[in-house]
Image 1 (tube, helix red, strand yellow):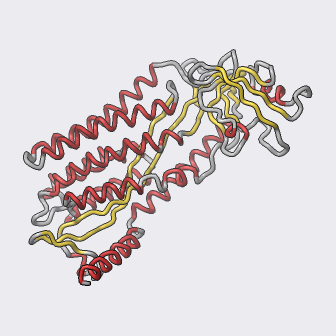
Image 2: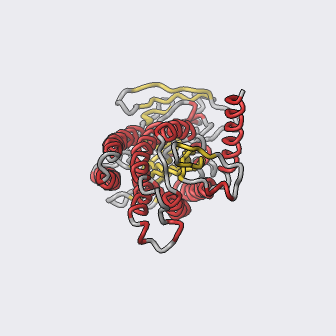
Image 3: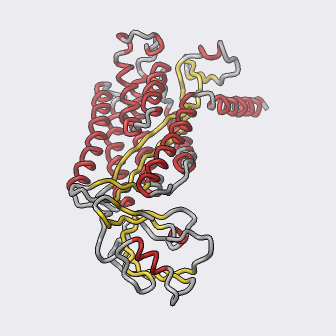
Length: 400
């Protein structure tokens, strides 16, 4: 009976803690920043293509729930291992998140940077001028927890890139080296990962009497549900977007494994925590720079061709999307006509011999030819909702 009452009380307290989760500034940083990035993307799409490809809610809608499951798993790990994070560390993470979340500089919200900055604050806490960034007595050991959490969150980052970012890159146009416009894809993602964290002390109960408190031995800890933000940015010019992002995810996994091993070993030899932090920051920076250099030195993947039109993307809920046309595929024929421009593609759709029917010959990303066909309906997008890379004039690049 006592056990049941204890469990009921804890469940009730955790539910209330979840409610207080929405008071954390990071939740609103996530929402505001995602909408802001969506708005800027829409402006750019209208400039590049004369219309929007995705709506303003695209970033928020496609990333809102992506990190919740991972957060639950990480919560089990953190509480199960008894990982403790100081309040000073949480303040440092929040300040860093505010700075780069509101400015939409998502590359700096990689777990490698966010948690490393928190570790630096722990190491320099006695020299920091503000009291809330200074460690309290008995909190010095939280550096090991931070390093282990850094490794775990890098694994989550790799998973989010591999499982979420791969499906939601967006198209854009820019000028190539010869002054001609080329297509590229951009992945600019912000994820929220809610995690239950143990924080030393029960000082919070002086202000919030109901706050759940855990006692382990002679030490007391408060339970917080903290929304951590993970950011990611990559522009892809010279590769198929899905393959490029999967490769990035795998590289982040590898880095995470190394950092996690060093983090666990730092439990016995604390100097490894500093080494793990350095490896995480340098490794993540190296991954980004290597990918950027490799992308810039290779020819454009989404460049205009003479043997058809290159698909840059498709507008959601259009015939192009229903036909499962993928970025990088080439439409070699439309109703028997080889299209060399947007106008020729549109004219081929309107031929009287085909009526309200469309037959496309598509060269996929594996070099194999396939047939895609569908009926055309009144009120549908007049160009099937396909976004093309096309060069007609030096000053113009059309997209549909």
